[in-house]
Amino acid sequence: MEFEDRVAALATKVTNQASAIGTEEATKNAFVMPFISTILGYDVFDPLEVVPEFTADVGIKKGEKVDYAIMRDGEVQILIECKASTGTPKVEHASQLFRYFSTTNARIAALTNGVVWQFFTDLDAPNRMDAKPFLVLDLLDIDDTLLPEVQKLSKASFDLDSIISAAEELKYVGALKREIARQFKEPSDEWIKFFAQRVYEGTYTARVREQFTTLVTKASRQFLTESVNDRLKTALGAGVSVPVTPNAAEVTSEAVAVEDLDRDTEIETTLEELEGYQIVKAIACGEIKPQRVTQRDAKSYFAVLLDDNNRKPIARLHFNGRQKYLGLLDIDKVETRHPIESLDEIYLHAEQIREAVLRYA
Image (tube, rainbow, N blue to C red):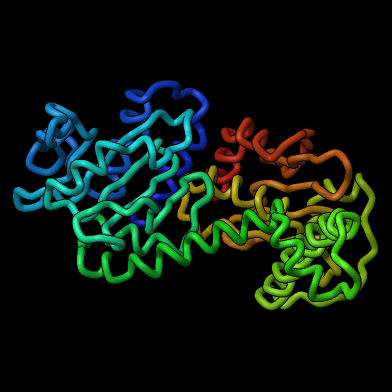
């Protein structure tokens, strides 16, 4: 399997099993060891490559252990500290990593709950682990731009010099992206004031702040949606003609569904539809390569397809109304709509999604 495929497969496993994992040991067995083995390519059962419960005396702290040490040529290269998948990994929980980092040859440290992997180095001071990670990989929300950097940590491609040289840019670009995402979701007072003072000429009062809190949030979401739409239209060559909307009976007909996807439509792809697509894709990638899962938006629904073929529908997202539905089709292309309250409920239908993929694959 290609590197990206292995990451996608593990992401599917994490998605399907995260709710059943309740302890740190279970997290190690289900998620962390497979990451070390299948993603980083080290033999977890070879003590010359992976040392569990790695121990080194550190000052007055005798016998403290780090969960895993990855070795190369007899030297520690990567230290890994694990927490249960039920909790968020926080740097204040990594005291062992800080102490061991300065007493071993390791230049890379990882803190993980099996779902989110935070990678650290020593950019701020030599031989002292930074307080902020230079790379964060979330297996439930994979940033594909980070995968080449993660691959540099693998046994087959390990390139410490390249990792360190790219770490500073990765650290700040990643931090900025996460902060921008937070501001778009829940704008801070500073963010609201920053924009309000550029478009509002009056005095910035508490009433104005309250008004612009709603306006900035709304404008941010519309900007993101419009940007996504522009990229989709460019990629798909979509036009802007206004279609005739089919009725509910026609939507479940394969002939009309194919026509709806093939014609140009004036559509609005929402962030919620794209998030739903990523969930369906993550589930499907347990059976096929990620690049085979594609999407097309139509006026009546958002389609997830195999091989960009509208006769190979994996799922349909009916998110335009107040009630959301996940549409799944049987072998005869008869669609059943399952009402969902949140996107997480898509995972409840993972088996049917995989079955649909295997029918066409």
